[in-house]
Amino acid sequence: MVRILFAQVKLSLWVIAVFTLAACNSKGPSATPEVAQLTIAQVRQEYAAYEGQLVKVSGYRVVMAMFPLCPGYVGFDKRTAFIDAGEDSIEARIDPSVEVLDTGDTPRTFLAYVRVFRGQVGCPGSVVEETFPYLEIVGVE
Image (tube, rainbow, N blue to C red; front, side, top):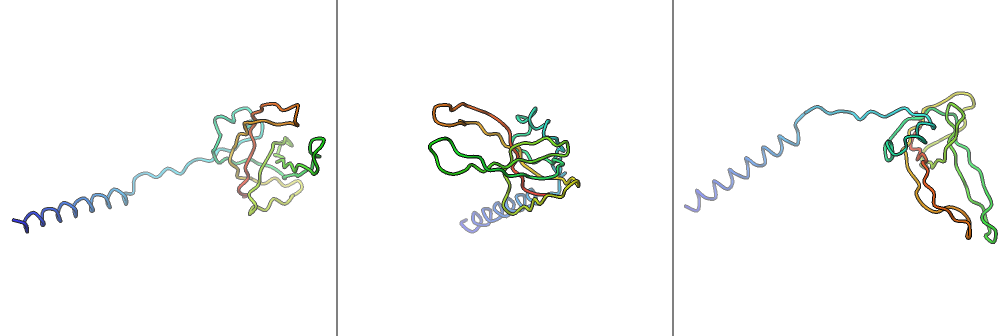
């Protein structure tokens, strides 16, 4: 009796394992997500629709600038901006492994995630709440 019960349990586990493997290895339709090609103007206007998504933006360069900190503070704030093919710019962050050398008049396609900053900006005494999109550049084609 115990042998029959043990054999049924083994058979049941084997059947479950086979169906699980079959489900995991099924070659159903695998849709490759489409990466939208956008301009900076589109990112600014529709950032809620693209927030967190990987997009392509044609552009020329990334520029960095240093701005003095608020009065009473020592140092500089480094800002990075991406310049698209239409010469429009947007705040950007760059993955350190990505080389973003200036290519002059030759546009390249940059891969970036659309991110949204929500928070306070400004100096003490003049802080305001702001929401604005920026690009997190993760690659160049």
